[in-house]
Picture (cartoon, rainbow, N blue to C red):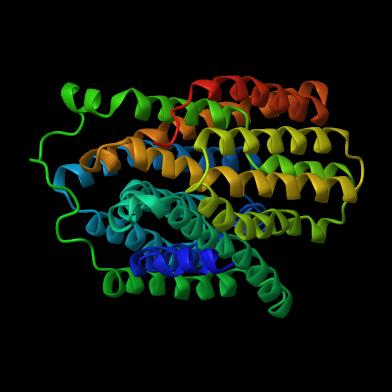
Length: 394
């Protein structure tokens, strides 16, 4: 216990600032996004196919921009300015949701929000590595992920509470969501001091052939593994659909994601700290085994007890692996190319998640929900074999 709190005290203040910035922005975003499909379908009369198109284009945009923002942060040798720009765009998009009267306005707001997310992601993750000693980076990423995920379940809870209080007034809830978004930007601007010289090498184009080679085989292996890994973990929307299938009351279905994020937030820091002292490969393998268990439990579940158990296992798996993969990238990438590495990692992981979700939906429509989760378990086992070749922690 003493060692645990000693590690927590050693985590730099900058990591705590970044974590609370993530928490505040997630509270704001999830207050909006947890209600947005319902708002579009009921208040704006948007067809479901258009809702899906808007979400798909927005997420694809964020994935593409992550690569460029990481590259730019490496070229400039500065991360904070890009992070502030990204969070600032996210904050500026929030009032547009409250003012929206058409699907086109929602699309514009979503695009601005996702562009901001794409800009800030890779520089933010690289900043954590820049300000943290190597021996506690796993704990640092775990802490940031914990705070981020706390926001991810506080946002929907707050949205549900305000909707009940204000008789389903979507726009009033959206105006409240503006407040934590701008607080996040203010905290980042005035609370975080970027290292004066985060890297020491001469600046060159990070995506030149020689620099991409300099990332090294270990780093490219982790980036590729991230893509394969996300093929095994499709969108969490399928957890919600599974809950709907087993007749959990409609009003309680959003709490499925709240439960997953609670478990995720509770486990992210302890497993992040553990990754600083044990084999990264072994912990990643353990996380995959837990995901196999989650898939099997969900495949066979036909009641709320099984759903809660499967969702809880899913949350444990997220806590074991999300911060770990970031720590593996930070360890294997050269300091002056971390933003680039995180950008490529995000892009490949996002493409994997998109393909996994499309495949999961196709299986669900043809052979039912169980086939989706069985397929996920099979891909997990394949990924487990590949981890035998993953680079070990030095």
